[in-house]
Length: 630
Ligand code: WTA
Image (cartoon, rainbow, N blue to C red):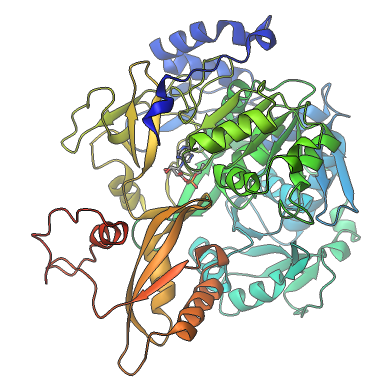
């Protein structure tokens, strides 16, 4: 991130502020800082609870905080039910457009509720009850909303797996969560071709002891194999009497689990991050409301897939909790032309557009004309997430897409945090490349290795000081790993794994990961999973994967591979290994480059020194090599 933009300040929002809470944002921020628990209690009071909590936070067993203890609710009570009985009954909850542009499906809050009740009735009839896990492996179609909400309504725990992961990755997530049910589709559309979801599920569940049923939504019409003892077409189930009638939203303890979402860490297998009904609901509702200043006539578009946390919090739950209209587009941004997204913004009058820097950089390359030929004047706010936004992308997004009038909200957060942590509000002056300050009620601090705060302007480790309602409660099935990963580096303090600095105005500048997590096109991958996919190729003895800067993707994966005796590293093998990673992990994890080598730099205890490989690849100083084995 270039330093030069630190002094660049934008104050674009005054006219939109008058008369709203945003006029007093500094006062809200100050009050939340003085007493965060009261701030969160007030936010929770804006939502519906069937029983009020006795205690805002129980911190008697840190870091296993509990929020709104004794309270009873369900996220669906607030995301759907309260709108159906209130003034938003006939307001559009969801607008969806297909990749081929020929189908538009819209759902009012009333009709969304009908769909959710239908799916809840069906999955309950299949024996899904409170606490059971359900894996959802669906493309960007409205059924992903219905499936998530139907699980939540019954108190079942959803585990959405991005529908671009391979059978191996899907299968390990199904097994780890011990899912009873998988909800998928026959296929998904990607740039005009079909990705065979059902085939992948078939392979993934072949040896799964826990999966009793698979529900299949017909989307592409692709031929698939249906196992009559296990697989059911959704359109058949919809016609059965079991699907009909009202379905009560089960009232749950605030701390009952809502979902598991697998995310990559530095080591080992992906971590099953667990979020709960009460706190997650209050956190996503509040942060979306303030950072995007949600308004009654908004059309909110978050381009993330429901398979990632951004899709969970700000495509599905956050907008619905706020009674907003959320928009979902099925396909790729350049299909059939590079102006597809701009066309959608114009056509649907999108007001708030939330996407990732990598997408901006890739669309920017096609030139301004694709965007400027469209009327994008409906845009009132822009948002960015997933990685630091570089000044060139910031300015293009702000000037060409936002017309220089829409504040650009840079939101820093993680799967584990569930909600924004560093993100301004639109009335807060903005600096390109910085998310601004921590959200109301949060405080962040940059520490050095020894745990001392570093002076402003100096780089260090980003930590969060206060607990927050949407914080992950644990790693499902592995409390100790939760403590070790996030709470042990600086006891009592949440460690983010990111490097950052703070400037003299208190603005935070996130630099990037300090561990072996790589952000590739905004997707979070761990070197360990990439290496394990590479190592499963029969010609490979061992490998090391690192992220190197890439103009569009942010980072690209570069792999160093040691081959087994008798194999030669040539172009053919390079392509074979890349394809192997694609099918055994995901196309998003495919290394951009592979270098064959005789050995890898290791410590005496046998740990691969990726930092040495990175320094060598970038032509930088290799640093302290005293622990190097050879
Ligand atoms: C990075 C995505 C800079 C960061 C919501 C974090 C960002 C990781 C930003 C979490 C941002 C996310 N600026 N870096 N605005 N947003 N990151 O779990 O490194 O997929 O630790 O959550 O993305 O990735 P995750």
